Length: 170
Figure 1 (tube, rainbow, N blue to C red):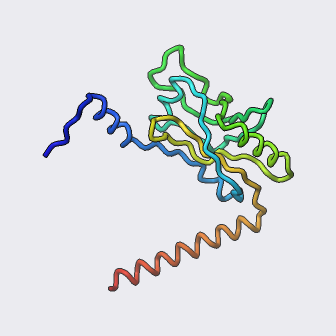
Figure 2 (cartoon, rainbow, N blue to C red):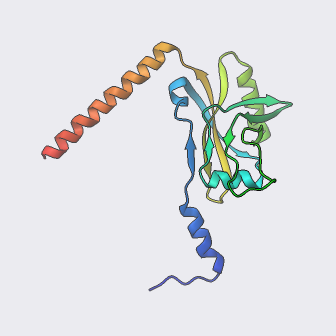
Figure 3 (cartoon, helix red, strand yellow):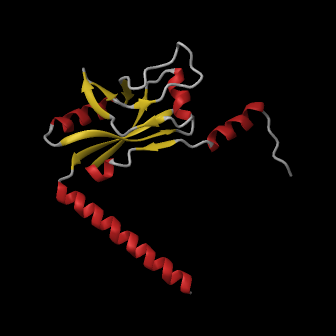
């Protein structure tokens, strides 16, 4: 039996939930040890959110810093919207992150400690269609830590290969 819809907007909202945009900084786990994870909102303009929905963003060079007690993300690349006219945004402008005040204070205290930084790790759309960014409180890895990461990744890959061969024989 077909599902009855009371509102013409419910079908549209179901379609919007199917579209999943997830942009990650794949280099970050290799470069940093993640200590703590936070979810923050972003202050964006109209053309920026449209460009994110199209998947045209990049977190590779982005970093976070505090200015006047507020957390800002710099060098986050969001491509100009294709159909934006003179109202289009700058691709690498500074954008404000939205967090609760106690979280901001805690992060600011930890960043003032030696060796900690805030890394934007993942940019995605929430269930309500809002742009969210996952930021990580992180400390930098040394070169031997990076070698261990590579070694672990290769051993995991080899193990998966062996499991796949064993599974195919059975």
